Image 1: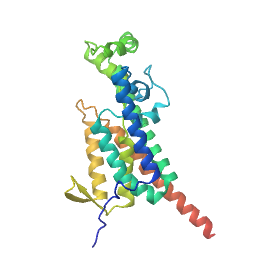
Image 2 (image 1 turned 120 degrees about the vertical axis):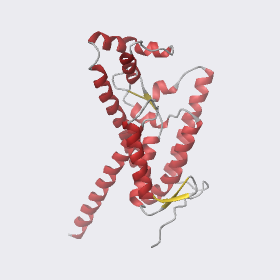
Image 3 (image 1 turned 120 degrees about the horizontal axis):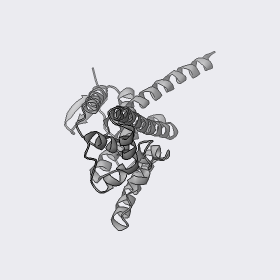
Image 4 (image 1 turned 30 degrees about the vertical axis):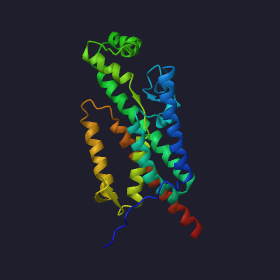
Length: 254
C-alpha cells in the first residue's frame, strides 16, 4: 500500500488568496508594532474579538480578530500553516471557494469562543450578587488597565472573562488542517519535520488534544475552543458542499 507524501510548494509560488492573506496579516502585525511603540495605541483593543457584553465589543471584530497577532512566533506559525495547508487547498478548490472556507471557519471559531465565554460567565454570575456583577461590569476594565483585579476571586474571574480579547488566525488555520485531513487523509505530514504521520490521524490527534486542553484549561491564554470551532465549522461546511455537489450531479443526469 502506498501513501502520498505531502510536500508543499515553495514560497516562490503562492496562490493569490493565500499570498494576500499572508500579506494582510503581516501588515496588521507591523501596524500593531508601529502604533504600539510610537503612540501607544493597542490595535487589539479595537480589532481583537471581545465578549459581546463588553463595552469594547463591535460586530466587525468577528472578522478583524483573525488578522491580529500578539507576537512574532504567533504570526509566524499561523502563516507557516496557512502556506503549508492553504496553498494545497486553494489549488484544489479555487480562490473563491477557499476564501469562503477560510472566512467561515475563522468567523465560526470566533462564535464558538464567544459562546464558551458566555457559558463561563453564566456560571460565574450564579455565585455573585447583582451588585457585584454590576460593579464588575462598570469598573472592571479600568481596574485591569492598572494591572490589578478584584480581591474577590469570583469577581476577578468574571472580570477577566468580560474583558478577554481573542486574536489570531489559529481558528481558521485549524479549519484548514481539518480540510486537508479530509481531502488528503493518507498524505504524510512530517511532525517536527521528522516523524511521518498520515494527515487523518494528525487531525484526529490534534483535535483530541485541543478538546482535552480546552476542558482542563488551567490558566492558559490559548483559545482551545476557538481552534475546535474552526474545525467544527470546517467539517460541516465540507459536508454541506459534498451534499450539494451530489445533488447537482444528480440534477444534470436527470
